[in-house]
Image (tube, rainbow, N blue to C red):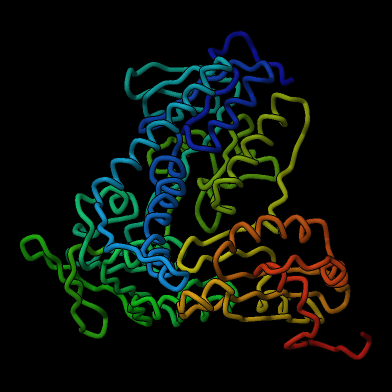
Length: 465
């Protein structure tokens, strides 16, 4: 354990009680550290309070209309269904409050002192609590303040736009909504609102949605979204928002005007570093934004560390949790631990959902001399009776020189669950031969992953193979 001077009030001061900060505080306390954690909003951070968890609950709600429709093909007669948005939001809020209580209880059980206040760094060893003005002397400081929605560049009427924060607690389900953005947050909320019955128009500046994902995935998901009634408008931006009583009009680059109950901007997130005091402490920022850290999450100030979205490395909740745990083990547990940021699985909870791990086809072709692509699209068994027009996409990216599977991409029901499991194999360095040797489990969609035998494309010099 790191020795800390008794002159300090605490061994560790954590700024931000999100998933990463809470994990770091708990593990550090379990190693015997005196820990204080400051949170100005609610314990649990973005993921628990206004991110992953409430969003996934709304995703579940949005899928029921499809289930009701599918039931007819299986012999069920379902009475006309009615949806009540306030009930959904109230139940969501109740669950979030319960989870916040669990997070608080877990901190208290290990002796972490919780302070409801914004905290500002005054120097390498001092934090000031704005709520009381008190100063706390710290052996170590951990910045875990996460990120916040980026409002986009200033345009006329930008104050009328809502973000994902407000979208989770609207007073009523919008009949029409315009969403600007093409990343996972925009795609997920487009699917949520469309599934619940809203007319959704998605506006994105690029040539296709989901930049950074595999191109086949991008095309497949866009086609599926459009089949579900979502209008995808690419190559455009919202240039102005006008308010008319309780309605809004979004003007696009080309002059088209879209009327809606709400205009939502989901154009990315930015690290929460403003007014934190990082300049006084001599903490450097990274070229692409966020706080610069080394492999152990240490900043340029020796006693100050940073984890999670505020570092702008891989902005996913499980990554922040892993980084927080590794920090506590490194600094207070005597076990220096580096987090491996390669082959991190990710999911987009749109309809249908996406699961991905490893390299895209484009990335593999840029980095590897030889690449084999295995791909399959098929109608899921359930759709044969439901009559729903949807297809599953499965794709394996293989290093042609070593036979190692370097990327897996799935679009379809249960994609996130499948990708979590196969990411273990990818992380362990499984080869295509290992996948082929795995017995299929029939009838499942996942069996397609182990039955694709012939590549649909091969790139590079294949003569040696």
